[in-house]
Length: 107
Image (cartoon, rainbow, N blue to C red; front, side):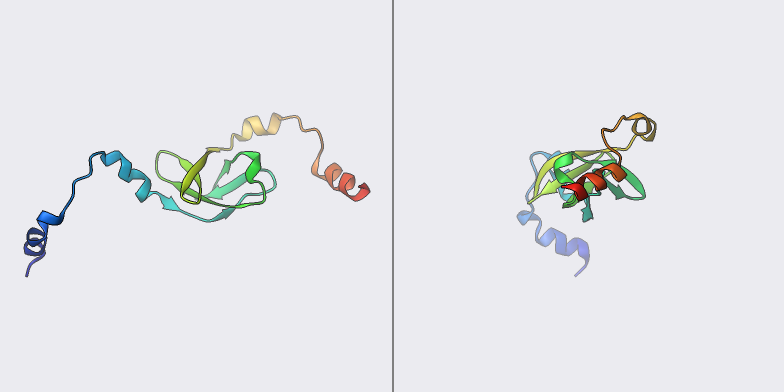
Protein backbone atom coordinates (compact mmCIF):
# COMPACT_ATOMS: atom_id res chain seq x y z
CA UNK A 1 0.00 0.00 0.00
CA UNK A 2 1.44 3.40 -0.97
CA UNK A 3 1.39 6.35 1.44
CA UNK A 4 -1.29 8.00 -0.70
CA UNK A 5 -3.46 4.89 -0.54
CA UNK A 6 -2.99 4.74 3.23
CA UNK A 7 -3.99 8.40 3.60
CA UNK A 8 -7.03 8.02 1.35
CA UNK A 9 -8.18 4.96 3.29
CA UNK A 10 -8.25 7.09 6.48
CA UNK A 11 -9.31 10.43 4.97
CA UNK A 12 -12.75 10.20 6.53
CA UNK A 13 -11.09 10.27 10.00
CA UNK A 14 -9.21 13.49 9.33
CA UNK A 15 -10.66 16.50 11.14
CA UNK A 16 -10.06 20.04 9.94
CA UNK A 17 -9.09 22.74 12.42
CA UNK A 18 -11.39 25.75 12.53
CA UNK A 19 -8.62 28.18 13.47
CA UNK A 20 -5.21 27.20 12.01
CA UNK A 21 -3.51 29.88 14.14
CA UNK A 22 -4.39 27.86 17.25
CA UNK A 23 -1.85 25.24 16.12
CA UNK A 24 1.07 27.67 16.25
CA UNK A 25 1.64 27.21 19.99
CA UNK A 26 1.98 23.45 19.49
CA UNK A 27 5.00 23.95 17.23
CA UNK A 28 7.01 26.31 19.45
CA UNK A 29 10.56 25.17 20.23
CA UNK A 30 11.06 24.45 23.93
CA UNK A 31 14.03 24.74 26.27
CA UNK A 32 14.54 24.54 30.02
CA UNK A 33 16.48 27.46 31.53
CA UNK A 34 17.33 28.83 34.93
CA UNK A 35 16.76 32.56 35.25
CA UNK A 36 19.96 34.30 36.35
CA UNK A 37 20.18 36.71 39.29
CA UNK A 38 19.81 39.65 36.90
CA UNK A 39 16.52 38.29 35.48
CA UNK A 40 17.92 37.07 32.17
CA UNK A 41 18.01 33.78 30.28
CA UNK A 42 20.20 32.85 27.34
CA UNK A 43 18.43 31.36 24.33
CA UNK A 44 20.21 30.66 21.08
CA UNK A 45 23.22 32.66 22.32
CA UNK A 46 21.18 35.82 23.00
CA UNK A 47 20.13 37.29 26.33
CA UNK A 48 16.47 37.92 27.11
CA UNK A 49 14.92 39.65 30.11
CA UNK A 50 12.10 38.16 32.16
CA UNK A 51 9.97 39.70 34.91
CA UNK A 52 11.70 39.72 38.34
CA UNK A 53 9.39 37.09 39.88
CA UNK A 54 11.24 34.42 37.86
CA UNK A 55 14.75 35.18 39.21
CA UNK A 56 16.42 31.97 40.37
CA UNK A 57 13.64 29.73 39.04
CA UNK A 58 13.72 27.13 36.30
CA UNK A 59 11.40 28.16 33.49
CA UNK A 60 10.30 26.75 30.16
CA UNK A 61 10.78 29.36 27.45
CA UNK A 62 9.08 28.47 24.18
CA UNK A 63 10.02 30.35 21.05
CA UNK A 64 9.62 30.77 17.33
CA UNK A 65 10.54 33.48 14.84
CA UNK A 66 8.01 35.91 16.31
CA UNK A 67 8.94 35.88 20.02
CA UNK A 68 9.88 34.11 23.23
CA UNK A 69 7.18 33.15 25.70
CA UNK A 70 7.50 31.74 29.22
CA UNK A 71 5.18 28.87 30.12
CA UNK A 72 4.28 27.41 33.50
CA UNK A 73 2.21 24.21 33.59
CA UNK A 74 1.30 24.64 29.92
CA UNK A 75 0.03 28.21 30.33
CA UNK A 76 1.81 31.29 28.96
CA UNK A 77 2.71 33.49 31.93
CA UNK A 78 5.16 36.02 30.46
CA UNK A 79 6.92 37.23 27.35
CA UNK A 80 10.70 37.62 27.22
CA UNK A 81 12.26 40.68 25.61
CA UNK A 82 15.79 40.99 24.20
CA UNK A 83 18.26 42.72 26.49
CA UNK A 84 19.05 46.23 25.25
CA UNK A 85 22.71 46.55 26.24
CA UNK A 86 22.85 50.32 25.57
CA UNK A 87 19.94 51.03 27.92
CA UNK A 88 21.13 48.46 30.44
CA UNK A 89 24.53 50.15 30.74
CA UNK A 90 22.93 53.46 31.79
CA UNK A 91 20.54 52.11 34.42
CA UNK A 92 21.25 53.51 37.88
CA UNK A 93 21.22 50.75 40.44
CA UNK A 94 20.64 51.28 44.14
CA UNK A 95 23.37 48.82 45.17
CA UNK A 96 26.16 47.07 43.36
CA UNK A 97 26.49 43.31 43.69
CA UNK A 98 29.52 43.82 45.96
CA UNK A 99 27.49 46.11 48.24
CA UNK A 100 24.61 43.65 48.22
CA UNK A 101 26.87 40.83 49.45
CA UNK A 102 28.18 42.96 52.36
CA UNK A 103 24.62 43.95 53.33
CA UNK A 104 23.63 40.28 53.49
CA UNK A 105 26.67 39.42 55.62
CA UNK A 106 25.84 42.19 58.10
CA UNK A 107 22.26 40.94 58.52
